[in-house]
Length: 224
Figure 1 (cartoon, rainbow, N blue to C red):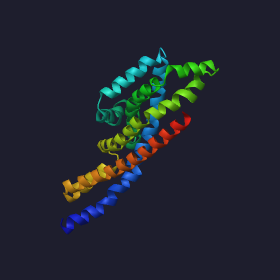
Figure 2: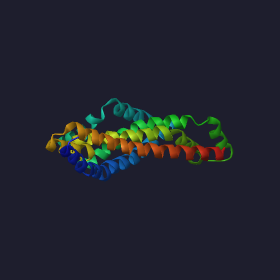
Figure 3: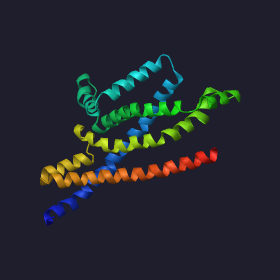
Figure 4: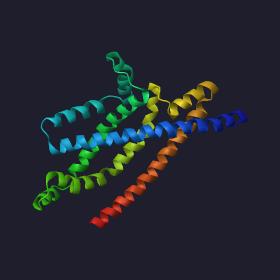
């Protein structure tokens, strides 16, 4: 590795990492938090078999999971201005990522809710609990414990998917790398470097996932 390339990689590391900490991570955290709100609401609607809302929930999941995330980004950011709705790049990215991830997490949560034994729900009714109390005290805690690993995987995947936000001019890590590569013409080393930074973020989240799984397992053992 020559001195010029080493200098470029050393200088670009902070120029890539800073957008990762100030844009990629906030975009991921905000979008995933909103996605979880959507996911729980949609999953509960399906779990409760609400007549009017269940078909709408299934239609939402069908459309979002059946269309590419990149297309959804383009529709919201570049398409909505045609009908007079203009959004900032970051806002558009948050909306699309949260809606997209919400559809996938909703199915994860639905499966987790349905994994709770029906006998526990009946037992809740027998001791005088209301439906909301049963959901809050019995069903949801167990469902979240079951859903934690796949939801964590979804979060890790979202960190990597945020690179697509560069297509709607969000100045996150990948876009920062593209600009540096366009100026220096060192494509392969720089794209490998940003790949390693994404790997670093994913590794930290994987480590946190394992800690969370161990704590949930120990908590479940104590409860049992």
